[in-house]
Image (cartoon, rainbow, N blue to C red; front, side, top):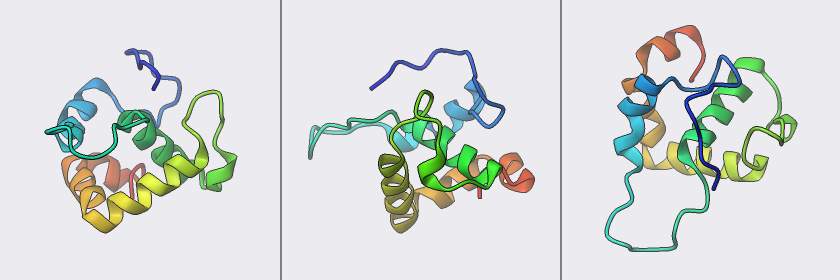
Length: 101
């Protein structure tokens, strides 16, 4: 898992205030299950990039984002569990601009 700093590489990356609004959705609890091997913030940034640039998952720049299969698996799992709807609700300005949809 990489350590994300405050520097944003793309305009689709979450700002500090946006991350603060959705970070509680990804708090790890109680040690149940396998430890997370990805940074949820980086995954959200990657999903936003795919949607904004209208590219395929496999076209994600590897030097900035997690592997495409990690991103797409997280996106699908978050959709099934309703987490993606909560992200959209927490970031209404992004949804309106088409940055998170």
